[in-house]
Image (tube, rainbow, N blue to C red; front, side):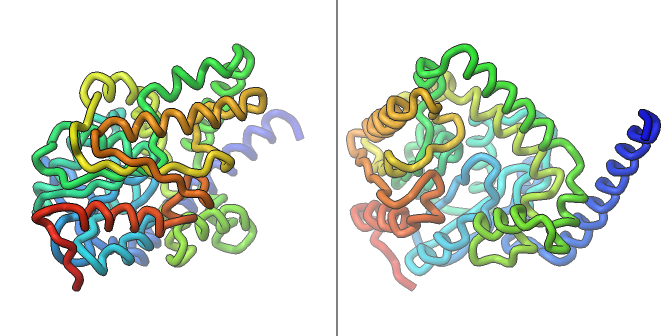
Length: 343
């Protein structure tokens, strides 16, 4: 087969992939309506999903590219005690996408508008995971009068990247940059045939990832959320937010005063999140750095504490959710005059 035949094959592959993606997306829209409500904020809509009753409102801010559904198990558990709100940022879960680059400041503003438009009354106890912890930290600094407490779950420090860089030589940095560019190219490529393979049972790894990420939900729903074009394109925008978050946090959220704060981190022996600086040459140093930086995060508040999830990696909400639920309940129980309300 010559070059013309190869080009024709690539075009055919692309057309088939795009075609099936369109068909599957429309089918999924009908099969899986949002579990919550689409709230209008300034002409845009964000998906807000609440459960439980009472005060305070526990609001979960998910990690980079993570749909609210990933936290459904934690929501079910804590909703026995109080109101628990999950939401999807633009392009994730059931929220429509937008085209402008994301920033952590913009994400915090979106959260503020959503809580107001969705009539979620303060005080709030924010639970932020990874990138979501950075967003929650900004929100807490901007609106201290609305906050009951803050739980940061394996959240990067604002100096994470620059301090991790000391363990990376030029060749390692170049390889990591190339890997990120390749990953970005994969994200914007049509994935219809990947979805077809998952639907007919060939792409077992893709199905396994959906089953793990959305534990307790139908695997078809997980596939629908993680393989949508808007989800994958929004993920790239959130990477931009993560990489540019550090200076903004240092300038606008340098301290949290006396806000009740619990920092939950993975065990030092478990694999770290993307961007943690872990390399083959500097594994131990990078692990030590991560632990040190988590300790520094706990010092953002005079009422900060550090908790280690001994049996979890980065995804503590899946691997040790009880640690998160316990931290939330302890902050609520210590708060006055907001007693824990059981329903």
